[in-house]
Length: 632
Image 1 (cartoon, one colour):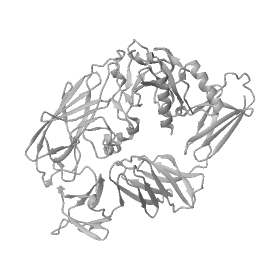
Image 2 (cartoon, rainbow, N blue to C red):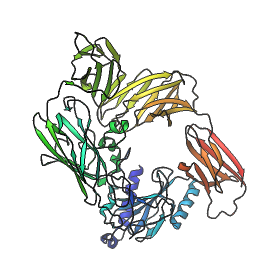
Image 3 (cartoon, one colour):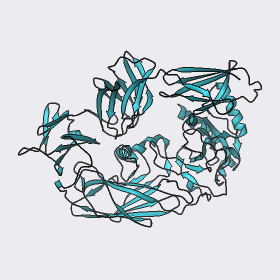
Image 4 (cartoon, helix red, strand yellow):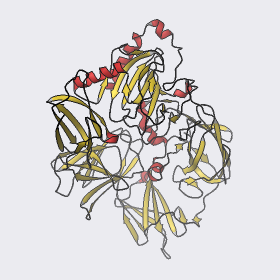
């Protein structure tokens, strides 16, 4: 409902401009920080972040807060938001051409806006607030100061986040608006390149493995050091960044073109983005690589379920089909918004795979082990069946399917099984057997409920991008009495939230104080939440991960801050949920900066008396409350 309301308001705002003003939409956009002076960026359009593409640009402010922020074009404020996360303090300004400019992470708004916001915060008795002023209530000419830069919300350092959006609220690339304040004559820089087999019949260097390719560099031209030998359907993946003059930051590459044998094959151009498809970034970059080794590559192919609109390709979706004994000359061109170009050249030769590979595994296995890559079950078994068959027996719920090794790595046999042909409960090779974690098939565009002894999962029709094979497991760690509810594989992304119900075995939990926490690779806990009902706890998540239940009975810590009327607030486990302050029983506005664990009083403009009994109540996510009372 909120988005529809906003579209209606935006439409009203657009038609409220005088006809002459709408016709005169050729006014240039001006730079919002230090106009007409050289500026530097720390972020550009389309950079690959963990859960979204970066929208707009991040403008440096010299590491300081309080740089004047100027209106990029004449217009009026349509939306004001104050939040402890995301864009922090943000302004949205509508312009005569129908575009909207966005200014985020502000420290302060202009005096007239600041007064209006504070008045509404006191009226609604809330710090976080979203407001939609009337048309022309806060109108500005081009280059007028609308606020001061800051570090609020999800910002990791002082800067101004700046966007230009069209009438459909799609984000446009600000660097196409002729800002001479930013200089760039440096071509994109290639950091890594990989080739991936796309099904179990494909191979790269005779293996069903993603292969990193070694590169040589001459200037900004790159070349693969050796011919890549492959067969079947393969996908290309590229990791790189762009730099701008005078800045060490690694920015995104907006345009990548692929040619195969001098014919256009694939192109991406991240210049226009829809917020509704932001989470599809999890299909744009190889999620398994990001979760295991860290870098976010660009897939130069389109996976099923990826609905992003900035690709150009034929019906092959960017996938290259390699035939035996054929040569494929591949050229990849990378461009930044200023037209600087770098290139990568490589040669792929079609070659039937070898059966026996004389190399070492890059990890240790027991007698038998497995991984799940998409819909492929990959089994590793030490080859010790003297004079016996090397077949792998798959128990498909009572029916036995036997398959032969696809290839050998020294004495380790490698088997590939398409889970679409059946989901095994256990596997047996010679005398070595293994019970698999429970595996469940989830199809896109379908509702599905999965029930196990300790967990129930509810998938909606939009929970997954593509067919997903979910692994579940449960254990109790006796060393610290933690119940671990595992939901995997962690190398697969979810499109939207699923509902999970846990049935714990231990009985020491306290309803209202015990909640679900996600466990990361380092053993750290992050609050997820959940509601108890008849001994079971239900929560929602968008992450495949390990979860446990922890009890938080410790109230938040409150201490006097370093400046007058300020206080330090902390919670060690579940985190701060809410806070409220009153002076002599009257509500007062508290500003909050989570990064500094700092809260402070922002007195109303008419307030003269600032003395009396001040009560600060801080509540954490587990419902623990601290009431701090002092005399001011």
